[in-house]
Image (cartoon, rainbow, N blue to C red; front, top):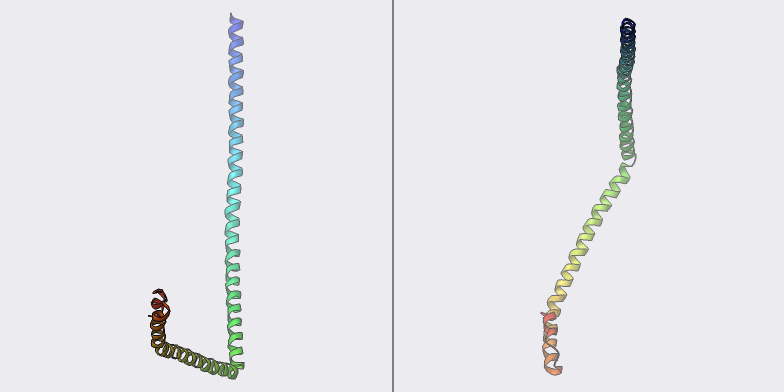
Length: 146
């Protein structure tokens, strides 16, 4: 029995040592994974800080080039206006005159159609009444003439 007790005690001690070693390796592995994660995190944070400075410089450059392009476009527009000032004035006066003529033409057309209806309406009604009496034209015709 003594040898059996010793064997069991030794087996238990071996198992205990193995579990301690396993836990030690597991702790080492966990520590290594955590260390790697922290290194990656610090690397990302550091690169973001560096990239932020680069991004700020790029944004400043982009804004300045956009502003320069806008100024260039505006200056080209102003220069073309100054070069073509006499043409622009002629075109403006032509456009104003054309609008006035167009409005006069529309007003004359409207007045002519009103006068025509004023003169034609009574004559058409008289013709409808006599035609209805003479030929017996339907009543619907008088609806269109009133």
